[in-house]
Amino acid sequence: MRKFLNAFGEYFLFLGKSIRRPQKASVFWKLFMREVNDLGVNSFGLVVFTSLFVGAVVAIQMYNNFSASAFPIPTSYVGYATKAVLVLEFAPTIISLILAGKVGSYIASSIGTMRVSEQIDALDIMGVNSQNFLVFPKILACVIFNPLLIALSIAVGIVGGYIAGEVTDNWTSADYTTGIQMYMPNLFYTYAFIKTAVFAFIIATVPAYFGYHVKGGSLEVGRASTQAVVWTMVFIIISELFLTQMILS
Image (cartoon, rainbow, N blue to C red; front, side, top):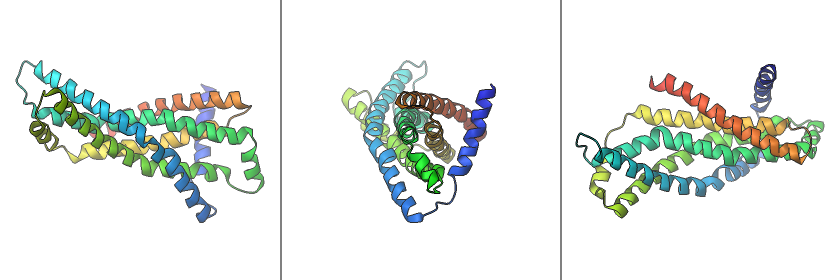
């Protein structure tokens, strides 16, 4: 318990040094654009592939549940239910967990490698705020770009449900489109994107903390990457509980 509390305190001290005004704006924006490409653009394919098939699966499951219901439920509600599941849970949470594995391991291993190869020590000797230099561009890139990935996931998931209807003929495209157009409270969308921003912050900072504080060699970098992914997922799940209680209750 004491070790956990010490690490928790170190994490917040680490954040305090990371989230500061960059020392040189031109260098910062160059690093920021590189992180957008590495952490965001390179995740497009994984997000699209996952969302397309999960959207189809969700739509088929909704149809099967509605068909088995004791009360007749119009097939147009398949589209609405698919949209609701994607917006409320799948896109912001499941995709963020997937990104925690892909992006989190990359951040932890890249910073950890710089630590064991003494590149971070060199930055400190030159008077550079290494935490701000390495971590802040990653935080900004994730917080800005991850909502775009989640919006893409929602759209692609809905298209996946539409394709599932065309392939199975369980519902018509007109019914599915009608369901998609049904009103959904704006609070649901707000909830989804607030969650996404919080999760993006966790995905950027927790692996960075583990990578920055690596001690040892390449073996320890691998262990730190694994720990970073595990703890990132844990914090995402815990934070979702609190956000759901605060926003939707």
